[in-house]
Amino acid sequence: MTRNTLGVRKSFLAMDWLMVVSLLPILGAGLVTMNSFIGESILFDKQVTWIGLSFILFFLLSFFDFRFLRRTAVLVALFLFSVLILLVLLAIVRTTNGAQSWFNFGAFSLEPSDPVKLVLIAILAKYFSRRHIEIAHIRHILVSGFYALAFFFLVLLQPDFGATIIIFLVWFGMVLVSGISKKHLALVFCIGALAFAGLWFYVFKDYQKQRVINFIHPLSDIRGTGYNAYQSTIAVGSGEVFGKGVGFGTQSRLKFLPEYETDFIFAAFAEEWGFVGVFLLFFFYAFLIWRILLHAMRGSTNFEMLFGLGLAVLFMSHLFVNIGMNIGLLPVTGITLPFMSYGGSHLITEFAGLGILMGMSRYQRAAHKDLSKNELPGV
Image (cartoon, rainbow, N blue to C red):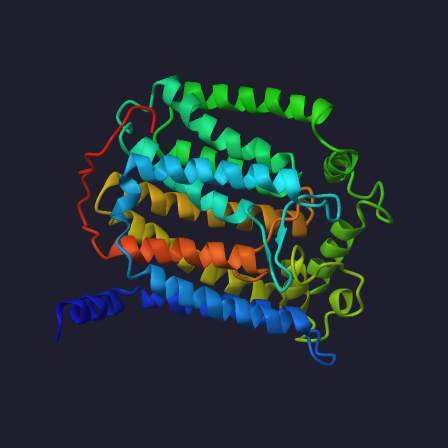
C-alpha cells in the first residue's frame, strides 16, 4: 500500500461521521418542506443537485492540508481578491429585485457574500491567534474591525442588509471568544449604536427602514411590508404540538407564506411538524454545533481553534437571525437557514467551511499551541 493511499485511508477514517450523520436529518427536513407535492418541484430537484455537489466538495476539502492558511501572504491575497469581487459585483451586475447580490451564469447564480464570510473568519482567526494575550488593547479590536468593515460596507452597498448583519455578528462573536474586556465591550456597543444611527439616516433604503419599523410595530402594515412576517408567525403558531402533517401546511401550500422554500422555510417546517419536529430539528443543530466546537478545541494551533469557533458563530448567527425573523422577534432580513433553505451559494459555503474544518482535523492535537512562524504586522 502506497504512502498516498495510506494518507487517504487515514483521512477517511478520521472523518467525523457523527457530524455528517447529523446533517442528514436537517437536509432531509429542508427537502421535504420545500417539496410542493403537486407535480414536480423544480426547486426540490435543484436542491438535491446542490446537496450532492456540496458533499463532494466537503469530502474533497477534508483531504487538504490547510496549514497554508496560516501564512499572511495567503490571507492578504484572499482579502484583496474578495474585495475585488465585491467591487466588480457593484460595477457590472444589473440590479435584480432591488439588489446587486448575484453573479448570474445562466444555469446557476453565485452570491459572493456567502464565501466572503469564510474569508473573514480565516482572517480574524489569523489576526487573533497571535494577539490573544494582548487582546485587551483596543487597537486590536479596531484593526480587526477594519477587515470586517471593508466587507460590511461593500455588501451593504448591494444592498444586502441580512448578509451585513451576519458579517457583523461573525466579527463580534470572534472578538468575544478572543477575550475582550467588559469596558471595550461597552465601547463596541456604543460604536455600533452610532454606526446604526448613521446607517439609518444616510444609507438605509426606505424598504429597509420599513422592515425595522415593522419589527417594532409588526401589525402596522400586515397587508404590505409586514405581510411576510405576519404569515410566518401564523404558520409557526398553527403547527401547535404535533403539526398539521407533511404536505398539509396551509400557509405554505396555499401560498399565503411567500418564499417558504428559502427565508421562511422554518415557519413552513414548524407548521407541518409542530413543536415536536422543531425540538428534534434544534437537537440536530445543537449536535452539529457541538461537533464543530469539539474540533475547534482540539485545533493544533490557536488559528485552527479560532477558525472552528468562527464557523460555529457563523452557523449560530444564521440560526438566531433566521428563526428570530420567522417567529416575529427580529426584522425580516433575508437570512437563510443553514442546510435547509434553498440555494446553492450558501450550501456550498457551509459545506466548504465544514470541509476545511475536517482538513484541519487531520493534524489536530488535544493540546494546542500556536507554532506558526510566518507572521507580519497587522495580519
